[in-house]
Image 1 (cartoon, rainbow, N blue to C red):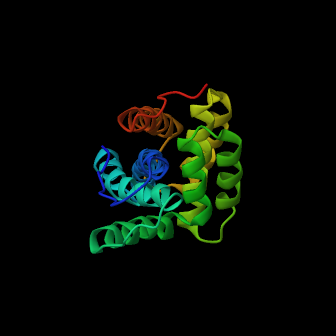
Image 2 (cartoon, rainbow, N blue to C red; image 1 turned 60 degrees about the vertical axis):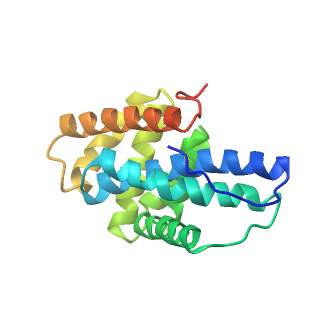
Length: 190
């Protein structure tokens, strides 16, 4: 789901930037919503949909700003605030890692995930651990992902077994691919 933003007197380049920014922003918002649901509980699909709306508008604005200055309005400000709230819930490192994951930058995502996982804040650390697990799975390194499942079960009170963690990992991986496809990004990384 992409959010259409009207940007008066934008150049072709800024409009293309807005489109790319909207797709990436929507996907980052959706994946951020998904990880938020994994960390804090809730419906992963609904959280991803809400995140996509916030991220799409913010991403489009960010992409357009690189080519032209856009007027700010109340709706964009609210969406930016909601995306910022998502960043605060997951932490800067995990949030930045999600952006890299959406764009198939697995090494970058893993680096952010490792850093987030060492956070003193348990929610940030759990988000970083989930980011690592999903990134390994997305990069076809499921054996590596599985080595982290015992840590995930230990740190995520909603999980009672490695089998349950594996199921959640597979569901999150499929949702990640769906989010990419819905936002006209490659479903799978090369």
